[in-house]
Image (tube, rainbow, N blue to C red; front, top):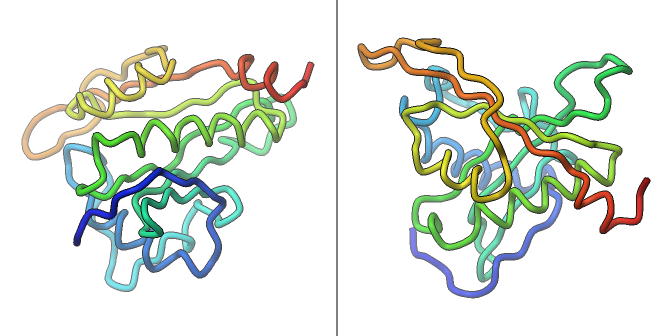
Length: 175
């Protein structure tokens, strides 16, 4: 796939975006980035936990370049201030060009707009590029589940990261 040029634009996904977003998600899957097995044939991104209204799409030159999906981790009222990144993928030809950073910033704003005060995520220790991106966007390591996954014959740590959303709340004028 060619790499389109231009600014990164972010918008909320629609059901019509599903084929392009599913293709990006499938192209970026490997045991370095997810412990989940490859999905069954016919997999569609919005068939699982991700929903269009909680998914943001990044485009560059009108071409889909990446996605990020957030959700509340539980239905508990006492947990409604927390949002979790449940999926993030940037097409290989758009990686290291600001797309991931723009998606994370937009997700933080979306979570803050919906009452979020914390944004969390999990990343495999075998994915140092993603960890560096998250740290550069204000996420901090809050825990490490040592040897949580056995991937390709090696035990891999699951790193729990989070960031506060107070800056987004202040910018949006919320308490």
